[in-house]
Amino acid sequence: MKKYRLVLASASPRRTELLDMLGVSFDVRPASVDESLPDNILPETAVEMLARKKAAATPADEDEIIIAADTMVSADGILLGKPADKADAVRMLGMLSGRVHDVFTGVALACGNEIYSKTVKTSVEFRKLSDEETENYVENVNVLDKAGAYGIQGRAAVFVRKIDGDYYNVVGLPLCTLSEMLSERFGMSLCSFAEDR
Image 1 (spheres, one colour):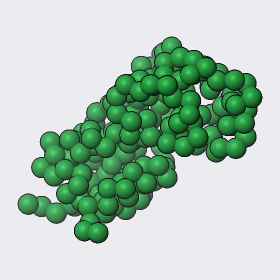
Image 2 (cartoon, rainbow, N blue to C red; image 1 turned 60 degrees about the vertical axis):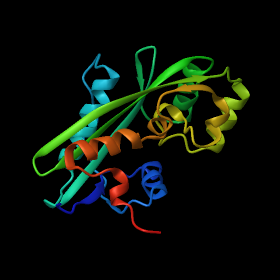
Image 3 (spheres, rainbow, N blue to C red; image 1 turned 90 degrees about the vertical axis):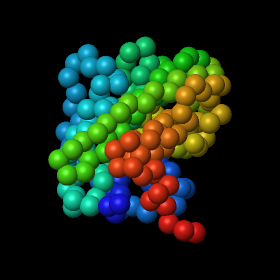
Image 4 (cartoon, rainbow, N blue to C red; image 1 turned 135 degrees about the vertical axis):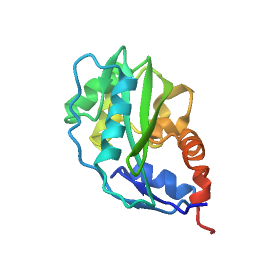
C-alpha cells in the first residue's frame, strides 16, 4: 500500500489540536485564498467551495494528502463567519441567543489533481444569554478567529443547551467524516496516520 503524509491546510489551532488529540502525524501548511462568496449562496455550498479552494491552493508532493476545511455558522439562513470586531461578535451572539443554529464544515482532501469533498451539518441550541454575559465573553475570549464568535470547546460550552450531530464539526473538523473520506478514497482511516505513543 502506498504511504502518504498528511498536510493540514489551516492555521486553526483547534484543527491542529484535534489531530494532535488522535496522535496523527501531519504538517501544517496554511492556505491563503480569496474567501469572498456569491450573494445568496447556501451555507453548505459555501463551506465546501472554500474548503476545495484551500485544498487546491496548497502546494503538495505526490505522496501528500491535503486536508482543508472551512466552518460557518448559519442562523435563519444568514451566514456568520468570523466577526469583524467585538461589536460584530456581540451582534452574532445576540442572533444565536435562545435559538437553534446550524454549523456547517466543508472538508476537502486533495492528492495530485484530485479533490474530494463533503459537508457536515450540526445543529446547536443556545440558551438565552444576558447582555452582561455576552459582553463578558466577548471581552475575555478571542472571538475574532471563531465562526459565529464562539468556540464550543471553551467558555461558550455553558451557552449550549443541546447539540444534534457531530460535536467535532462544531469545533471545526468533523473527525468521523474525515476518517471515512480517507478510507473511501485512500483505504486508510485517520488513525492509520497516528504515531505510536
